[in-house]
Length: 164
Image (cartoon, rainbow, N blue to C red; front, side, top):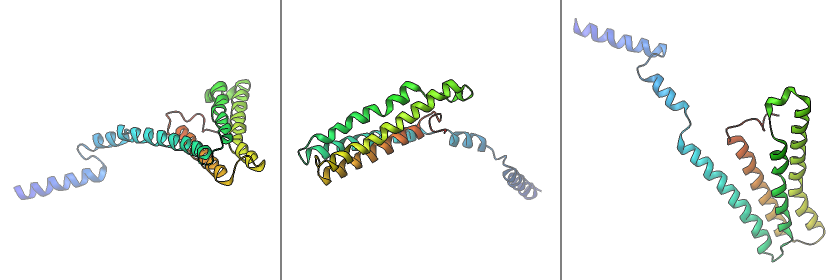
């Protein structure tokens, strides 16, 4: 009798597992669905590392060739987020055409400023003010800082800006 009841209990557990009613499973799923604090710390370290690497490449592009003209590009790194911060990214205003027009204008100006981060080193290189190595360091800095900015927008808690 006891061996039969043991098989019955095992069969009941297998049946419960097949239905998804495993004891403690809901708790485990709830824990797995929450973001881990370590993951948020890794994201923060990634963003800080990208920012530092971009600034390092920017300064190396100037210091290695003893030419500080490429630092002019740093002005654009300050100007790029300004329209985004001033005009906002309020996706709740999608129904109001006046507000949405300002949000779109901010996105346009942000993009136009971002083009300047590549255009300034290209113009300086074309004018003969910087050499190829400095130009490549500046482009690498723009790529790293741009990637870091997009990663920040994607890793942030708000998906409003990336919802085109």
